[in-house]
Amino acid sequence: MKQHQLTKALLFTIIGLITLILSACGNSNSTTEAVASPTATAAAASPSPSAEAASPIVIEHQLGTVTLDKTPERIIVLEFSYTDALMTLGVQPVGVADDSDPTLFMDAVKAQLGEYTSIGSRYEPNIELISSLQPDLIIADLNHHKSVYEQLNAIAPTLVLNDHQADYNEMLSNYSIIAKAVGKEAEGKQRLEEHEAKIKAAQQKITDTNLTILPAVVNPKGFFAHSDHSYAGSFLTALGFTDPVANEESYPQLSLEQLVETNPQAIFLLPTEEITIIKEWEKNPLWQQLDAVTNSKVFTVERKDWALSRGLIGSEKIIEDLVKYLGA
Image (cartoon, rainbow, N blue to C red; front, side):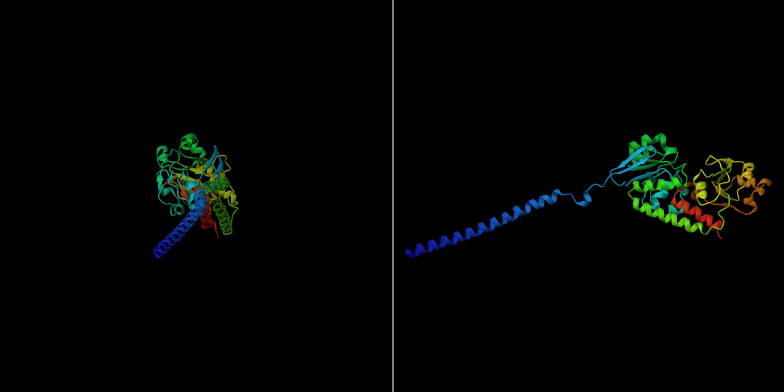
């Protein structure tokens, strides 16, 4: 009997010890969970660095202020020069006003330009098509798009620059604004420095910068000089050449008699068609009186390079042509 009671007491003791051990293990797990839980909650509540919003980009432009809460990814440009700018910054537009003719892009731009949607004419872009592309930034021109600015700005933040009437220096300023708008301000500054170096290096290869040079768009109907108020003309004067037209208009139309009066020493023709008014003028004795003709300094170059791109790439192509025809 005593043996039986002893055995029973021992069994209860063992059961008690097992219960105590299991209880301790349970308390240990609970403590661990209680300590870990606040840390996990804090981690979940804290946003990752990539989720933090960037500072808004605020830019003053010709018709107001643009505020961009994030770097734009779907960009529409309404001038060829803006496409030129984006290519130097490695940014692809989703829509471009290309006058429904992609051959108007200069070769160096087209080589970098990916797929995009043509939104028609620079002068009358397709507003409905622009809206359907769901842009987060539109870059427009003051002269061509002021009348539709409110419509464009209702679709997406619209940056308006004076492009069509811009000279070379204003283009450089516009370029910096575009670089900031697309989140590439540092890259833009570096590319401007590279551009300046390229221009200076090319200038050293031109033997005579004292010439009076006249670029002109020519078509079957007329001769349209580019004065120093035009983009190409202003670039030439920035290089040290003299503008023989001295006209307040950017693109004055000249008769053959007026051209003889200005008497440029070099002429760069920018034809829009294969046959132009020059074919008719060449039969006129007055044409032979031009210094440019007498000295065999009448050259034909691409209008898309000299007059349409109006950007860093375009300017670098202009001076490349100058070195080709006027270099040592």
